Length: 246
Ligand code: CA
Image (tube, rainbow, N blue to C red; front, side, top):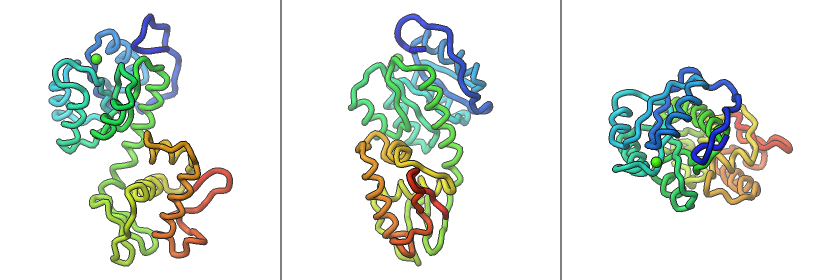
């Protein structure tokens, strides 16, 4: 089912969504609001919607949401401004931006302002729902890690300060190495493929080479592993990817 373009067909069945997730839908196109609302409710999300950026900010201030679906083209305050303002107010809710334009610059601006994902209209309902689920999963795993400190061996990761120390010495991790380490910690024990890392850690800046991942993992190991040549924590899973055993 393609949303935001032309006639609609009956919706497909999709997997079970998180039954308690609260979604704020910020979109000014009535027919799209109706379609999305119905579909999200059918997936057992709780949905509030508004077509105005300022009202969206008020709603987000009043009650917690698990996800914001934010259209870029809104009358008055546009989606970019709403996104920027939500982040400025310290709200870490996952934001999925929607736009009618497929300009790369829009994508980059949105992500730089703190949006988590981006979808261009027209889009498939299935794709929207899949992305919502990913963002909600990520949102659920991040806070515990995001607010705390994680230690493994002699390495201490302070997520508040985005600082990694080893025996009290600050490790000079690059931004990408830090994001990679954070992702590993958030998914510890799970096998993570190179594609997943490219998608989730590199995101839209991804160079489409899994070799990129290997290079960064190698340099991260040099900094955090006791014996980088024989990794104990960031282990290679043959043919599948990596697993963090911290
Ligand atoms: Ca719009």
